[in-house]
Each structure stands twice: as C-alpha cells, then as structure tokens.
Amino acid sequence: MRRAASRTMKWNEELYAQSETPMVPGLIVALDLDEFGEYVKSRGLDPYRPNVVSGELTRLIEEFAWKHRGVVVFGLSPERGTEEALIEIPYSLEVLESVVKDLEGIKARVEEHGVTLSAVVLLDYVPGRPARSRREAYHGTPGRRRAWKALRCLKRRGGSKILVLA
Image (cartoon, rainbow, N blue to C red; front, top):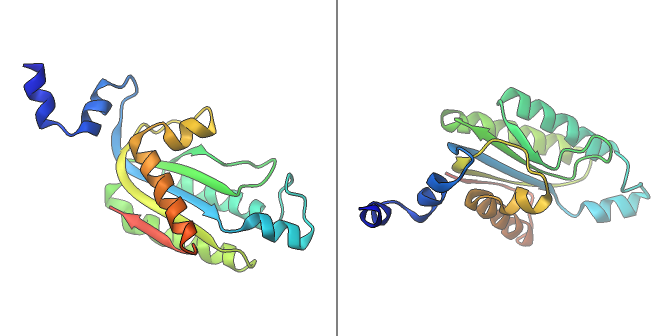
C-alpha cells in the first residue's frame, strides 16, 4: 500500500511529507551583490563594517521581509552589513508580481551606489524558519538548493538580473 502511494507522489513531495518541519507553498528569494568584494577594495572600505551599500541593503531587506510577511532565513547582518540574503515568504503565490516589483526597486536603489544586484525568485515549498548555518540555509531544502544554484548560474553569466522561476 505504501509503495503504490509513493509512486504517485513526486520525490520532493515525499521528502516534505516525511519531514518534521511543516512545509507550505511559498516563494524563496535569494539575492546577492555582484562583485562586492572588488567594490569594497577599490573604495578602501572595511569589509567587516556596514558601508553605504551594505547598510542600505540591510534596511531594504528588512522592509521587504516585513511588507511581505517573509522570514529572513540567512544573510541579514546589521553589524557587518548585508551582502547576500535568503528570504522565504510562505503562502505568497498571489503576490508574486508585487514581490518582483519590490525587488526591482531594491535593485534600482543599490545600483544608485554603483553596485549591481542579482536575485532569484523561486516558487516551492518553504518551512518559513531561519537557518542555523549557511549550509542549512542554502542546502536545507530542495527549493533552497535550486534557488542557490540558479543564483550562482545567474551571477556567472554576468548577473545584474532578477530571475523568476515560477
């Protein structure tokens, strides 16, 4: 009986069904500043303190997560400044256009300072809880892993884009 039921489920749905953490449909947003290390070196900035760009990105991500009732899984750092972030927005399928529009606004604000931003928006199941480590953040669920791979691929191809995988 169990075997027949598992054949009809997709492999990731079965994984989610066996998980101790409840998963719900939602959006995964992964974003990263392109070549930010070079920007910091060229301007002689301290990489361990917030600067104009990383401090602004921290504030923008906090506002974005609050507005869309999202959970910042990893990356938000008011002490050091934010260079990358992973955000999950549970039950957000109907607000996809609003999320993309707000990401375009964040991208435009960051580009005013001379830095480009790459972002991936992925529709998948999300647990909606912060990660304890970087590894758990980017490889804790199949959706997070796919978002991270898509972001890396986007950055290798030049970056400065918002990719929507829905």
